[in-house]
Amino acid sequence: GDSVTQMEGPVTLSEEAFLTINCTYTATGYPSLFWYVQYPGEGLQLLLKATKADDKGSNKGFEATYRKETTSFHLEKGSVQVSDSAVYFCALGADGLTFGKGTHLIIQP
Amino acid sequence: KAGVTQTPRYLIKTRGQQVTLSCSPISGHRSVSWYQQTPGQGLQFLFEYFSETQRNKGNFPGRFSGRQFSNSRSEMNVSTLELGDSALYLCASSLSGWGGVNTEAFFGQGTRLTVV
Image (cartoon, rainbow over all chains, first blue to last red):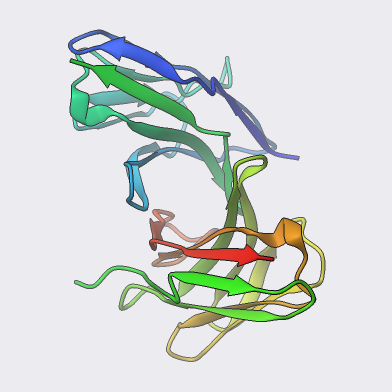
């Protein structure tokens, strides 16, 4: 069946550092890919998405590119802020969303 | 516009009982999906309803069931509760759900169920 693998962390970075959270997937067909974020005490929010190969999703300085050849959708940000501290979930959408386990990101000032 | 509303926010039930959770989607959204979130298993898809019909189902036992009403509101029922059913249950709504053009899902705050 479909599956998503991502680093679980916690990942601890200093403010203004470069961020990469790796995400790889296994799926039949060509699913849409998503990154969701869960801030402390809040619900899941869509961060960005890509619906086909080579699409780049971007939002709030975060980017991810749908790479069919490597079945990956890595999340990147050039300069993180303390306010980016949250749990990030990679997900693929086919018949319902299949989520990775989530990566807890901690940004220190 | 109002977001996805889940009620109640917190529930404590005894093993063997049953429970019903409610989800009101964003106005105009016809698809409602349910997810279970636990520390061990993470986020897992339960089922999706679209226009009152269950369209997709995850790998959960038959004790987990749901329905959707004509106004798109949805309920999820868990019968014969087990300790392992303790989790955060999330509801998500979207315009057309899976198979449609717009697959962006908006999540509610969740219902925290504790089984004792």
